[in-house]
Image (cartoon, rainbow, N blue to C red; front, side):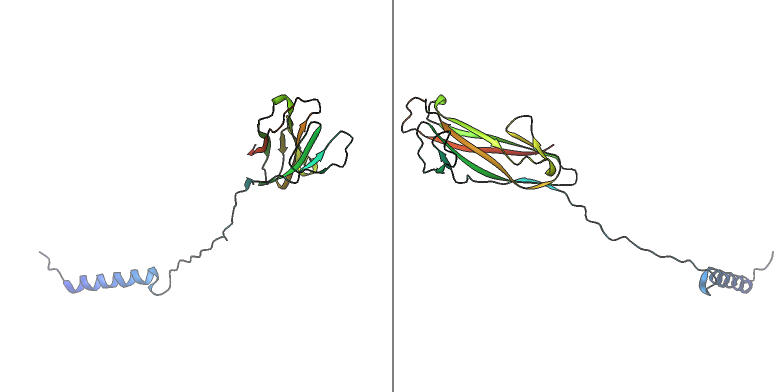
Length: 182
């Protein structure tokens, strides 16, 4: 049997280890480069669709069809009178491709005979250059692009001259409005 020489084996192992270290970069002969970078963060924001509460403006009284200018209304109406006011409804549609629809409905409670008082609501603010067009019905506006501003809504209450006696009665007028993305 052959005698195993520990000195030769140890020397060979040490030599192999030193050679591997030298080849793998211990002496700088083998190098790997690396680098990293990143982009700046971008913010992507969502738009907004909002409608705020509003209040009635000052009411104007016209006592006949020939009364062009009208006068300030003090709160009582008689047959033949029409009172009118404008409500500015604040609307906001923000977003690159946003489209919307504003619907306004009268909200009236009356102790008048139904035939004796008429409440009409008219939407203003139609402006094709701003993307605002009339809807399919008189109580609707359609927005085809972003918009921020007030939409004028005219409210008229007419007590026809030929109406039956409706004394000491009341009419409460309000508006309900909804803005919807389309």
